[in-house]
Image (tube, rainbow, N blue to C red):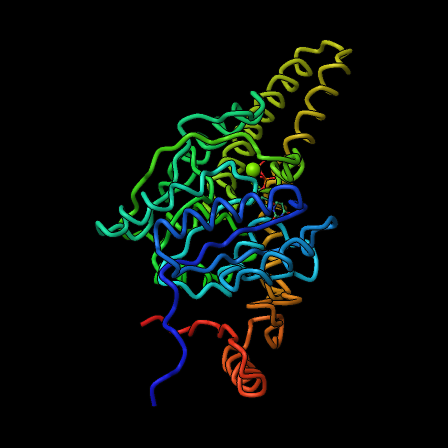
Length: 356
Ligand code: UDP
Ligand code: MG
């Protein structure tokens, strides 16, 4: 039996949005224009509301009601940027998938150029930032240092100066969505997948409106996730540090013995205090490094769902959901057929999950 429903869109755009009420309409205007130029009418824009506390979801609802190519996904709570992207990937049905932030720091208009490079055989086209407009010197400097350190630690080459702004084939997007890890560093995971990865240099723009949703605390957590998911070298460094400090301790012991045998009294409480606090500090540091890994093991073995989807809205209709929120496509299509038959109105059906 032939399906009355269309094939998957040429491209899905996945957009994590956290408190972006001021930017979302302008983002959709520019992104829709860029998609129309690059893929004709055949696209979907998946806007993931990551538990925003402002008017982001109502704005998404209004936009999605006016244009069935805009899909709203609402998470039950804030799960963080990387998991919001993952939730969007679980819903996106396109033959190609673009990841882009909602704040217009990454220019939507580059979609055409990314599509062209993929036509030439790339599996992934990632944006590389050649300049960062409107970002603090602190962020630019720490980002540069961090990527250099990560490059040295990781056995997977992760290109420097990239964000998650990229276009992937359906296959790469499926592999990425199926990777079960909770502490996600998506740009690294995509590098790990391999295939033909091509860069597209671009200038990072200033935020359209609002402020960064990555305060220092989240930046540090993200950097630690990146390092612990792509390297175990810090554990080895901890071992070497332990060895070096133990060697020093033996040296000190020998020195103490010599002084004792020579019969001198030892007034040096200051030096012994220094030595013991040095050793205690080193031990705590090494334990802390181990703790970073052990904490993540605990998180991973719990095997909780990565995110909980509260609603998926397509063409003004909420899709039926099950479990943690993987939309049930069979149920959704059945529901749409029923609505369609009952009203006779033009209901936009969801695209099929199965890429041809
Ligand atoms: N974001 C999100 N959940 C969060 C934090 C951020 O979905 O908990 C989104 C945010 O709305 C934006 C993108 O992730 O679209 C990148 O965040 P932001 O622009 O604040 O980070 P920066 O560019 O300053 O590093
Ligand atoms: Mg940003």
